[in-house]
View 1 (cartoon, helix red, strand yellow):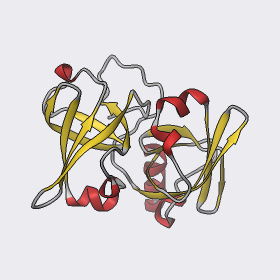
View 2 (cartoon, helix red, strand yellow):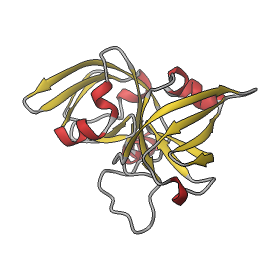
View 3 (cartoon, helix red, strand yellow):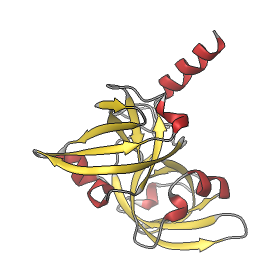
Amino acid sequence: MFTGIITDVGRVSEIVEQTVGTRLTIRTEYDTIGIATGASIACCGACLTVVDKGEGWFAADVSGETLDCTTLGSWKKDTAVNLERALTASDELGGHLVLGHVDGIGRLDAVRPEGDNHRLEIEAPDKLARFIAAKGSIAVDGVSLTVNQVEGRKFGVNIIPHTWDQTAFAYFTPGQAVNLEIDIIARYIARLMERS
């Protein structure tokens, strides 16, 4: 489980295709001595398991399912990756509860400055749009954000300067795909309403 508060922006250093899936090696500023093999790290919102590591890098195997359902299948060498280590019992819950299970892929329609902030406008797939509400939470490429407005399948979020500087958002360009994870509370409320 995660909070959507990014603690490092890594870079893809190697992509090795396997019989089924892919092994990604990611450069990081994390002290990898303190990361156990088998630990979970959210990579642009997708929870991956560390299978190998060394000084300044870790590797994770990515299944075909994850490659198909996230943006990870389009990554290339040097792609910027939002990273967050899994929560521990003593961590501050600064964002919202993020599972690291990407629900779908959205498309970035626009990135524009708004004063010192930046505004992102994103189009969600039909199956997720009904879960997105103004003032609700959403994870975009693993970052916990508050939804500012919703119009049909499109929603907007504001990015403050700190978040812009500490995440891969600074590398975003219109038209690119982004990983979306809807708020777990919205998911369960929708399921309860379907049953009643």
